[in-house]
Length: 460
Image 1: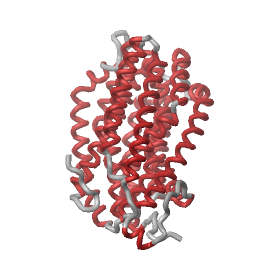
Image 2: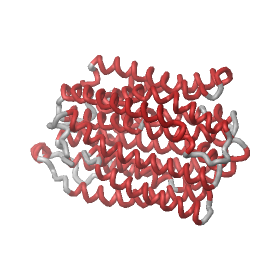
Image 3: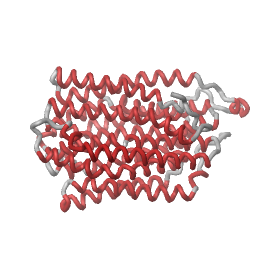
Image 4: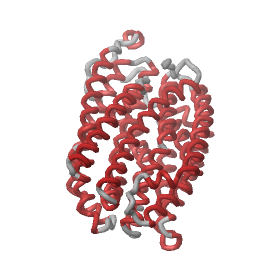
């Protein structure tokens, strides 16, 4: 496959072929988490699947925090790369790795200590509480590896290399599935085996990814512009000013990436109140939704990198061309997803549940998927519009739009669940997505994002 240059090649082609490995990689990531649920549901039972579902929204929040942090780092890295400042680009990478490794250790400790309290606070059914706590505690022990794996993937994307994360995700996914079958089915370790398989597979991938990144950075030499300036930072492992700029983008990016997961977490108590059978069906639907949003989120992340590199190179008009190409791209994805879910939602739901599962579980999964199928274009438009603002470092409106998205989803779910039942949880989803898009799109039309700049060619 030809490698397209985001600064010189056709915006549509460069975006698509940059996003494609990200989409495939994230699909593999979602694939093995889905297979994880299928294996547990088929070989352990409905309650075990519900226990993973009770844990899933919380674990996904932490992973999305990692992805958002990685995007914050990648915007700075991409802008330095676009400006041809390679030594500063390396410093931004080192700064990100040191900072987010420290954050991951702290978050892992917090999660390990509070997992039981959080699950009880979410009204997790008593019959699955012990399994859910066991899964979470194993997960949080391995959180630094899981966290850094996602940070490293974002950095590779910032360097214009979306293939290496794809290859590592394929490796990690296959290894995880093999270990799932061995530990869950072969050794009968149940939900603990599923958690251990995930931690070990992604932990090994994180180590390999780090080694490849260090080798990759050696190939970047001091650019001609840096030699002329004579003040490029060399062998600097940590820069507090760069960290400050990363944080400006990372915090709203964490929010944007984790909106879906935070929303799931906050409304988890609503779903839990309907019992473990409904929770099992909701878990199946939630897993499929997570797969379906992959091309949308990946397209948004590709637009973010495209925007950062081109603004770093002083080409805002090229960003607008890329945005128009991205609109066509997510529209095509939305049509494919809608047709697939409309035709096959029953078969998809049944693949998660064993023959002994109740009708409430099947009905919940089917209702979820048949409704949400028509609205993925909303999150696609939201993702690419947010991608432009994030890549430009225009974070204020971007943050407010995502907060509104979250607020609407939570308020609607809690307010209407007593009237509409569990359906209120997924009816709220497209309402939040659309509100977020409208606000971000108004900001995009203003053009103010194109005047933002997070880096300086000559730093004091």
